[in-house]
Length: 381
Ligand code: GMT
Image 1 (tube, rainbow, N blue to C red):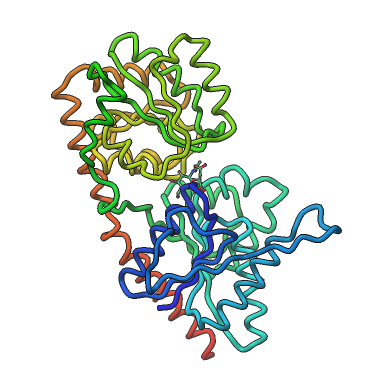
Image 2 (cartoon, rainbow, N blue to C red; image 1 turned 180 degrees about the horizontal axis):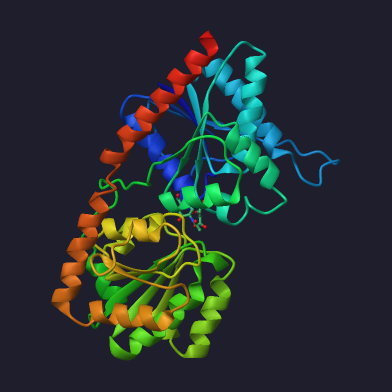
């Protein structure tokens, strides 16, 4: 198949899923064309089946806001026509689904019928998408998609609750590539961070309010009173500096390291003992899955799709959003006993295997085939 993938080329979860999916499809022999405004973060190598097409938005004195959606739709028309793509797969509804719809209409005028799949990732529905600023366009473009997928049942339910959806939504969960995410021998790194064999706790995110990073710090403060430990804060975003200030005010700065954005997050996860994700909302929780693949159990909230990933008392624990006390108690129960910790680590790895890329990839391939077939039937009518 020749597949066009549209995504945000950043460190965000939806961009990561789109890029990893594209890479895996290319490894299977499919031709994959990424169409984005810059090279996706994890696409920095050569592969014969992978192509990258940059969407450049022309600046013009008239524009206060450059029309990215039109530039993207035009680029899609160009790439589909000249690369003869079979299907487009857009990740994150805004503005990718409406750009794909527009491109599809334009391509029809050239006699080209191309189906497009929209994968909803979370905030495109739960935060941004349901805002009246975007809602009519999001509803319309989801309904005009030839295939709609969500990364969890919870996100499917949210989509059906917030939008008037007429089409079928298929749940295809996120996945993990064990070739990249597995335990790496990084003992020297562990010694540098925790010279006295302290437990290492980790949080990775974009430091947006939805991640409730202050809860991570409050939780850690409570854990630190019972278990000698260090906290690694990986990533960057709007709340990072207030988080750093908070650590100073709480007098725990010596035990917390803010590492910023990191490429090789699997290496940092490899030295970690417990992952913290107290999010307000989380459609899936890909960062927690990445941790589990590296044998790191997770303390998470029970928001959104997290109960579909984390199994309470097996590979981690879940608490209500904001219940920092409960999260800390559960974390301590895992961390204070070597045997318990080891068991949770093994269980985390087992749970991650349910989301092995090798299991999820064929589901996407079959889904594409069914959507292409449906489009053919419509065209032949
Ligand atoms: O979590 C974010 O703020 C980034 C966001 C994105 O769109 O990149 O992540 C969403 O998509 C990920 C991949 O499907 C999911 O694992 C995250 O749970 C989801 N985030 C939220 O729902 C808040």
